[in-house]
Length: 228
Image (cartoon, rainbow, N blue to C red):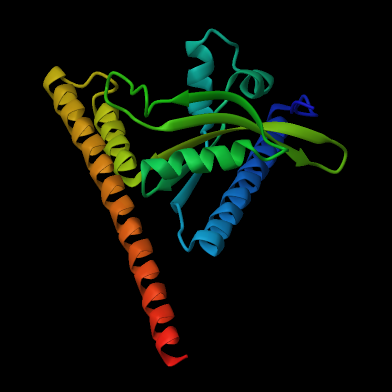
């Protein structure tokens, strides 16, 4: 069942919204932590560097509603704003991004609302990230509600660029000078190249580790055969 606030009182409704969306962030956060722990157990490697969560401020929500021509009500917030609850997952490598997304999507209680792959299709600014809007069931005392969460998955390098770009756009109220935009686009390309090189380096390291392990096993077998 889609989440609809139980009360008509705006303050109580907003408090209920906070309760439900914070619960949704906890649910997704726990799922990610379990997947990360399992990955460490099976592969001896953690794909997730860190996780950030946030609840969108009432001011930002109202601004978004007005932008799309909706009245500023709690009901409209829940119905039309998909990113009230947001979670950002920071990874080491681009390959980790798709693995994490796939592992989440494959969970039975997760329903995918939309997917936007800004890694394969970057924004004109150079922004790269993998965005999912999903719903997760929240079990309240009297009902179960499907609650929307926006999940952004990106590398450390992508997150650094996005954070800097956001600060610059905020200072210029979204109208940064053209030469600044060009420099940001150049930096975005550098970030993309860095991610590619780091991924190639990591793959080479993994191959060397496997090769060394096989060589050691082969040497042990030879030594064992000599003693027999």
